Length: 321
Length: 169
Image 1 (spheres, each protein chain N blue to C red):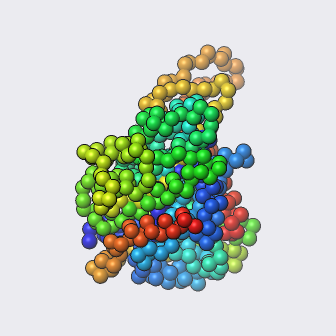
Image 2: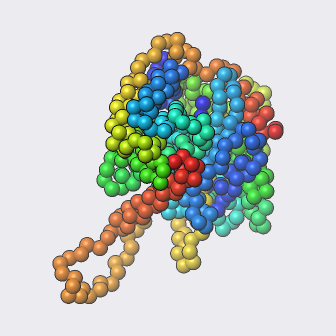
């Protein structure tokens, strides 16, 4: 059985660092190679990937496929591709105060991409990681939970560059994913989806060690009347799912865009009309200037082709052919 | 029953007898086309079957993920260009080449071949193999198979115990 875990989050939040630390710390007989498709500047171009072998459980070989996605804003198309088929998500947020907007935008983007596939973030196993806790002025986790963790997912503090909090995050998401798969199989998907997901969240609260404030968010997510007491047998719950971290790329100077998170998925206002340039004698007839949608399509095609080229190179280097 | 039928239809679950049949299909493909290796990969990056010379030496996890990613990227490119999808991809190398063929919107048939055969031969048998794979995966299963495919109730506890052991190392 294979489960897909995706690390999501804004650019430079630490998604790739997470998977690198996971690969460093996992025993050799349990992990596959770490494959990265990235730019020359070491920014994730398509995805990072590694496989983690849990071993045989109840007669089945369990394997986790861990992905990270590119966090830079203009890689939205490729993020959607990697998010496809995710069994669980780890959202890695940057605790820097100046990255709060990026975190919120990334969360909105995640919700939007899931909605396009008729999924809700509340229906998937999700774990949130507050990374870069070592930075001076790092925001309090309570505030970050309030503004970002809108679904009340279990959360962990981390300093990924030191490997702190990385494995606990991964373990939690793996647990939630396994429970979700187990619940889905055992129940035969005949139960109400809402009941199932609520049961998953209740069990998730018992699956992972959480601080008191985190338990409140879990309870809100489940819309339960009360947080289940410790020791209460939990219903099968989806195992933890790694949230993909999306790292938002730092924008170039002079191109800073500040917008409320709610505007992330809305179309931007059309650009103001440019001054007309006098047409020379060679410009016979009308030339249609490429529209914004044409430019977006061209850019998206270029990015996808670049990603495909990167994959082909990676396949070649893997000596597939 | 409905759960297993849905899972089978969505290709989430592959039964043992299906895997055996698919291996026979891939072996026959390799014999007829004189290709080196043949793989069946789920569009979400899971290796279903892997046959041919040196099949055990391949990093199947990474290859599956990369192939699925490649196909997904080109599929989105096709949509932006007004096409439904590109159902066949071909990468040519110095010594070996690889062709990817989409089957039933769920599986990718990857065939690696060298100069000992031709692209036309590979494509001919790839299209026939795609039909055979479709037939194999469309076969109904008896109730015994459906019951055995369900996870045991100990799965969740066993998984958590395994996770504790893994992260304790």
